[in-house]
Length: 288
Image (tube, rainbow, N blue to C red; front, side, top):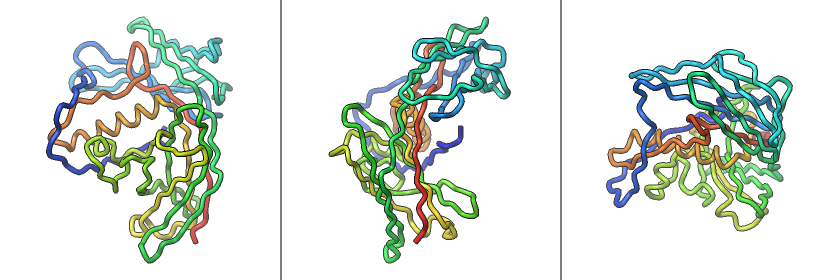
């Protein structure tokens, strides 16, 4: 799924002291590395992509002859059907919120693979206001939603410009503490620099369940012909939160002369990859 094409801009830093090293992804030699990848939205079909990495340099090949089984709350739903380009899906079975899903993959050439996710509940946008700060050359948004304080929650925010029924993801900025320096405009130290380009955040810094987030777009940063903006609030699983941040850190690492080794997060047992889920709410606001 292509909702999450990440930005990869990073400034240099000069010193890193006492940084714990972690292993990177293994280099493919003779044994193939199996990978499962799936990011499913609530109310969408249960599906995933299955591939293997072989050779050096690495070559990605789709796996088309595996047996992939889905379970819902520990009860078997059925076998996923192979479509094309490594994609398997379960016909007429749609992801439900607050429900646990497990996938197993068996193949004569590989060890058994298992993974699971709990689909989150949609978090509604209560209100969103748009303020055109023409004198400062920016447009500011104030988004309100209700966070459940009884559990740890993870989110992602996308901003899209809409013109002639075509939408484009556009860059936004924020000084709000919830982003902790993730966005490209921020520069708050080593940890934040490794995360620059990430659009995810947690509720760790929320002061109350009634949450307001402020962010803005620069009027010179995008095509000014957008008539509307689509603000998308994703309630994501912790696994995807960890995966997205590790992915961004790896992308940023390539531009840094001094950095610690980084693992790409995986929640797949017996293979690599990510099997995760989200619930989406959005609102469209007109340009003033």
